[in-house]
Amino acid sequence: MKKLFFFCVMLIIYLDVWSQGKLKPQCKFGLKLGLGMNTITGFPLKTHPKPALMGGMWVQIKISKSWTMQAELYELGKGTGGGRRGYGDYLLRLSYFEVPILFQYNKKKGYVEFGPALAALVNTGEYTDRAAFPFQTDLYPFSNKDFTFNLGAGFVVKEKWFVGLRLSHSLLPVRKQLPGASHQVYNRSIVLMVSRQISFKASRNKQSEGIE
Image 1 (cartoon, rainbow, N blue to C red):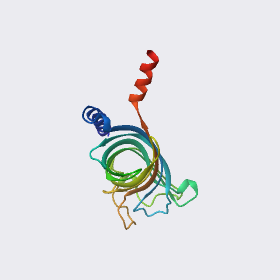
Image 2 (spheres, helix red, strand yellow):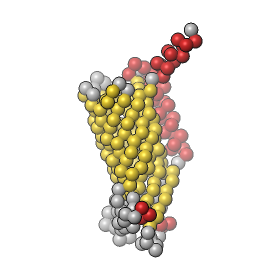
Image 3 (cartoon, rainbow, N blue to C red):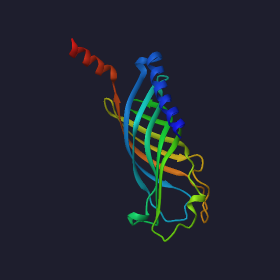
Image 4 (cartoon, one colour):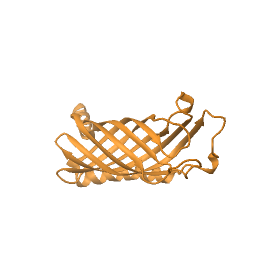
């Protein structure tokens, strides 16, 4: 897991350095914050969607007049709600570090995006309001990785500010199929995000003017 996280950080840094050297005027960097609603399939207990925050950074490279490629690194909560909150019988908290590689088609002030993501599981919490789980949790551990596909859209609110909505679904099960369940276990989420482009060049220019 540590190796995966280190690789993801190095990938973001590499894309940033490479783009500044090759496509300096066409590279953008920024921060992202969002709120998602998450569910998980394949559980024999009653659940409901669970809200969770996400936050991180992104690097975007322009590859043609209308297309850009964007790499991101953020922490994201997943799972499903219920249990201790009084809705349903089961509460699941999953926390991931996730790295999507997205291809974006841009038209005027709007864009659509799609692409895969690889996530590393960093924390889990599983609770029920029943006397016991209907399965042995230690026999059904969660995978330490989540491979997903993302589909989204967004638009420019004002200069350097973006708002987007993204759907995400696991491509591979994140846990062995549970007894009493008719479906495999997959993460599903919809996330509303706000992004802010950061311009280091402008900051350096201001510092230079202050020194002079």
